[in-house]
Amino acid sequence: MIASHSLQLAILLLGYNLFVFATYFIDKRAARLGHRRVSERTLLMLALFAGSPGAITAQRLLRHKTQKEPFRTLLMGIAVLHVVMLGGAVAFFTARRLGLV
Image (cartoon, rainbow, N blue to C red):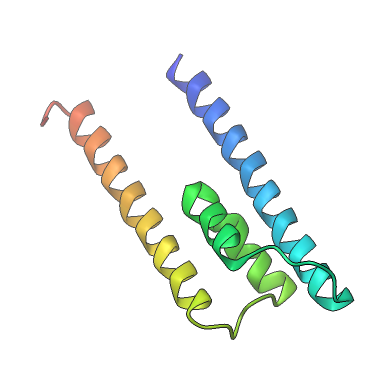
């Protein structure tokens, strides 16, 4: 049952991060064509809500907002926050499984 939930969560996160990547792609294309852009706030909020892998992948592959400050620093801060939270969750569930918590 846990494996099933983990797989569902992984698929959900993958789908969401593909959506985030697509949004960055759309913004990059809009920038090139001089069309209406996606706001930086929206791009960062998408990253904050579990989309940092998709956002960083898009930033690197599309070379989108790689020099823009403070956007670049905020995105990296979001990614660090996600890594810390994931590490904490792994530590908690490992300790729980071992009966330490």
